[in-house]
Image 1 (cartoon, helix red, strand yellow):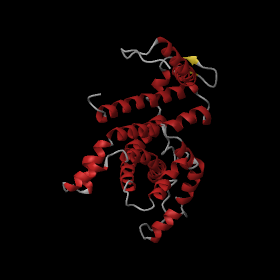
Image 2: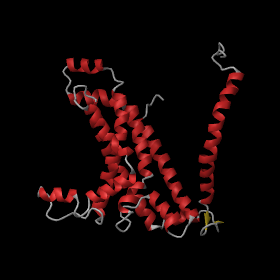
Image 3: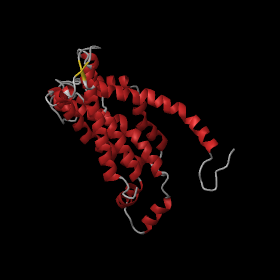
Image 4: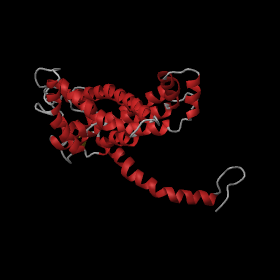
Length: 298
């Protein structure tokens, strides 16, 4: 094994070996990630049906400005993002703090139970959700037995309740996923810090806001960016639970791209243009979150 030079630089021979190890990964990433991205960007400047595409400049991007379905999909995606992501992040933080308590019994069971939804089959959980929230489902029956409602709620056919159902489904599925990151972060915090705070008379709320949250800031930033990207690409839940209905009231940008590609008459150029809207939004939101939540010294 070759040693590093005194200056800290890696010897040329070791450097070449290192590049040989990473070269296959670079080639695969270029082939399966960057090449399709470039092709999609070129396709976004073409119009036509099927494989009969012709260059048309910015026609697809101009069409976005007058496309009511795209505006509806964009609005729904923003709505899910603004409401669901903060709720999920907060829930994951609270639950992870509770499950990090060493005095809590059956911690392993609760952690597993909350994490299970994110490894559950998407189709299976969608069918269960549709069953639970059906007019004669368990949720309506429970609410009526508690005298909270007088008649069943149309969760799947009412525009407002269909959106609420999607938010509930996404939150249920992904809260446990984020909880795992927070739990790993909490377990790396020295117990002595909390003990010192307790001696100083800090309450549980003070410990959470003054110790836990600041020390988990990098993980919170990571999960927030990750969740934002996931919500902007939201497709599976909407497709399987409401199919974008009723009347496109829950359609998202990703589902609209799918419809343009496979449900309607295939329009690859316009679908590529819509997909680049997601890319631009992800870049903008990630930049904002890094500027707001990132370390200013970095």
